[in-house]
Image 1 (cartoon, rainbow, N blue to C red):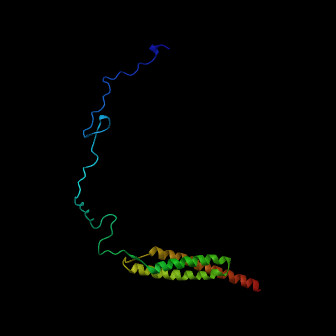
Image 2: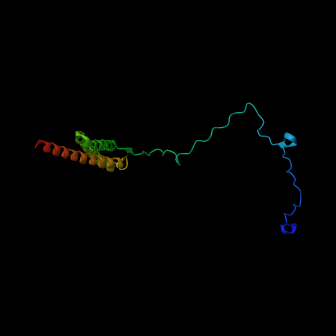
Image 3: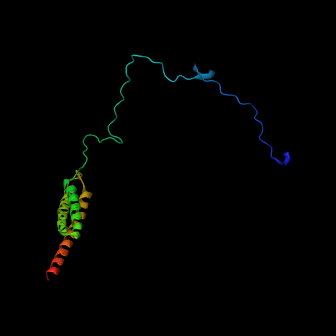
Length: 162
């Protein structure tokens, strides 16, 4: 290969490299000047003033006076709890006589209906409509399972009695 076959290299730089001028400040390592990192210590100064208090309201703040958050309805909580208990006991009944106890779900249905009526009449002072509805649904399923268990028990007893 000849030198004529290679492309030409980069052009030489017009000026050689020069380092930056040294910084102002106290003399540091190897002639470099370092900046002062801290202010000089002055004893017996009064402490700084406390920060100003936050303004009322705004993002992440509690609401001001006069506003009250809606309280959850106790009947709605009772409806949800008894509805779930009725559902579990009603579905467990297919393994024995305990399914008839699923009738407890009826209490969940009654409490849920009363809670929804109370919540709607409270003009926003009470919350928990979703819990009450869930108690009605789970209680209804528990009652249906208890009735199905009772019908199954009656069918089995009448078939074995004959």
